[in-house]
Image (tube, rainbow, N blue to C red; front, side):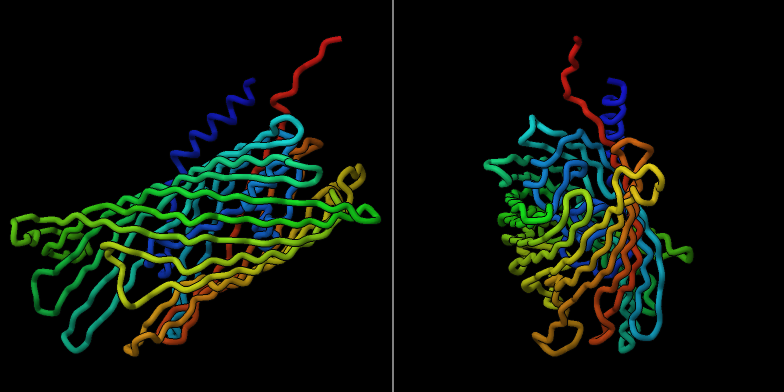
Length: 431
């Protein structure tokens, strides 16, 4: 009982920490920020696969149908670290950020179903961009902070032999702040526009998985997911005012601009619309020994409506898609002579068209699509003789391009998770 209470306390402690995250990517300027991947460390170490693959020890964050395979109560907590190098073609800049990646709890319901729920970051805003107009000697700084979090609940069950179905509901919430600060040479006061908005929304995903037994103890896995169209509502206040920028870069506000009715601020509202997303997966392997899988996800263009500070003709959204390939290898799960034979080795890669289109030229409609590529590997380290394990994940990749006056990001991600497994709901028998 004490162990169960400890797990639950850790969950609520993690809820207060999950919002304390940072981001330094220029691409977090767009929309509600840069999106986080909805995968566990184990899944991201295999290129992000999980539509067709699942096991009895780990929560599946990609396909809710995979939770039907859970046979042990599982508590997982993940930490994410990002080393980022930004290259604009002439110079580079580096930064490091870290945050709590997720907290999840899952447990079986009987021998044909499983449930999980948890909390994790959904998006993050953390950009700082500077534009200098030499014609009028004016500098404009765009900067923003904040982000959104995701609270979810997922349920999976077997509806037939080797065929499982799952459903997942999510709630998105958070606050973003966007600023535009302009200063002209020989002008004492600068001008700033500040907009703080709250983001609220929800979503629903369904999935299926099917396993086909082959000869030589091989298993063929199939999977599919559909995340239905959803929207996030944004509401907030926008203020424009004059200020003095001090030598230490602190700000001293002066007068707020009023409208014709004497109002010093205006209400802003908008909607971030996420179209239906679908995914397909296929894999083959030998249970408890090895697995390799290929998965494909695709989605129509996102859209934004209403009044938002960073809505402009400088960017748009198009269709997005992602290809993931990866797997794992476990030499000998019950090895007595060698610890490293009981370690799970994972690897994979992904290629993604993010759907973000940026126009950084004067020609209308001259958009550049932002692409992302990552290669990953990881280790699943067993803790003693128990089912719990420590998972390490490493990923190297690049995003964007230096053409068309844009920037290219090179990143190295380190992920760490602790997966604690136990049997909570087994009825004790006394002979």
